[in-house]
Length: 251
Image 1 (cartoon, rainbow, N blue to C red):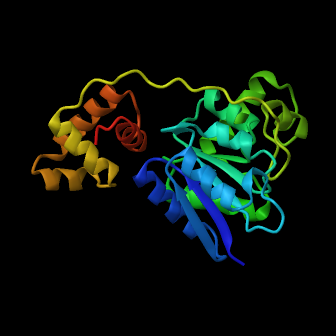
Image 2: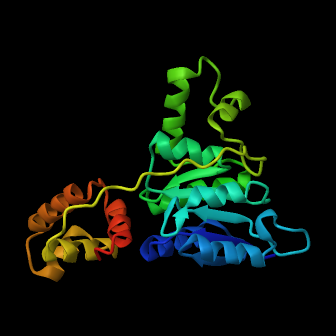
């Protein structure tokens, strides 16, 4: 039996990366549908039974959903799919409470950070087969911290705690909370041509030493460019820089 997967991610580099993660994670035959925006994703879902996965169709079994998209917010789709019998996992760069908890309240069954190592993401997705929620290590720690700060002495696996955060577990009915809008970052300082070139190579997965060789400059000069890029874009990782640059048409 073929397992259908839909990956909603507007950045082509990140989307290709997630496709590799899915292929490595599951031994069953699978079919991956790629969508770069909400409209494309909704059309694909409509062909597979609509937002409730009607009986008799070939529904999706797994959704990987980015949050910030060209035509809206991934939380909108999570809310629409609250009754869909599939595992819905957020794949994002945001690890803060303002994104994490609203996503769980909208029905996410897991929350993964795209900047995690390939092996970590594969290991987390494989937990789905064992009936466990895929959570990036940083997200699991954040949930534990949230509980310790204001949740008393209940264990983190206690259903009462999970319900208080909005996390309902794999394939459980999701709350009907309205998605919380995400503020978009302010306009960033313009990158120099050299910085744009470095960022282009970064987004393609080249290492600092490889970029230095391609550009004919020293590796520490590349490192200085990267620091400047991070400062101008207000990011802290190459994955986040690549996604933001793509969204704003910088590369």
